[in-house]
Image (cartoon, rainbow, N blue to C red):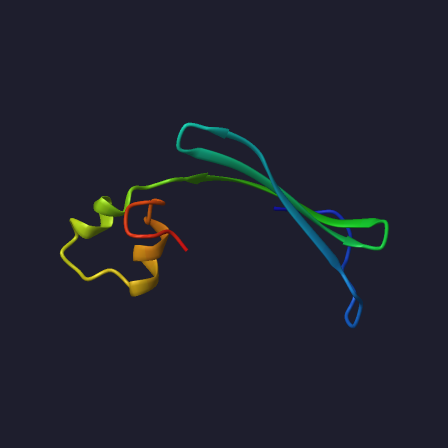
Amino acid sequence: MDFRSPAFLERDLAVEAWCERIDGRKAHLRGRMLDGDVLLAEAQAIFIEVDLSHFERGGRALPAAWKRWGAVEGEGGAP
């Protein structure tokens, strides 16, 4: 995260985020925060997709909502 300008209280700020590209399991994401035309902050991140089976091997029950993330259309009904 790179802060570019101060953010003042009680202002309506705009936040934008997007995926620049996907390389296999890696999602390269970027975002920014604006006060009108003034750039307040920029950010970038890499998110890695991890198969749910990785967490199931840990021996603890997964949260119910996580099961929906791994649903494949036609196999259990994706939301």
